[in-house]
Picture 1 (cartoon, rainbow, N blue to C red):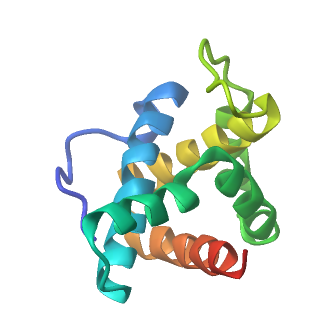
Picture 2 (picture 1 turned 90 degrees about the vertical axis):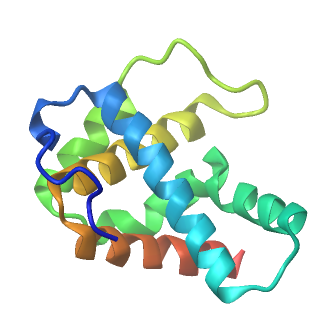
Length: 134
């Protein structure tokens, strides 16, 4: 995965909320790509499988697997995302899970916008393996 707009913006100049916004899309795309490439399922089954990986509870659980291998800079981005004020929390989600997921999405957005696609895939592989065990 190469950045689609390589020199349009710097990860350091984007707000935390915008990092999470981009990271949500990147994370969802990685999950969809992985499912389509590894499973031969109808679209409805693909959708329900993706939801099980991208829902905030699964993302919060994945953070536990990632924390030991994150760099200090990555941990700082994650913490900024986790601690960012959110005006909306999904009804069926715990606030703690939602914040952890937002931190993860901010991290994925940051790494994507920074252009470190190899690191993005490395972290996603860990998330994927973690979600496949559950």
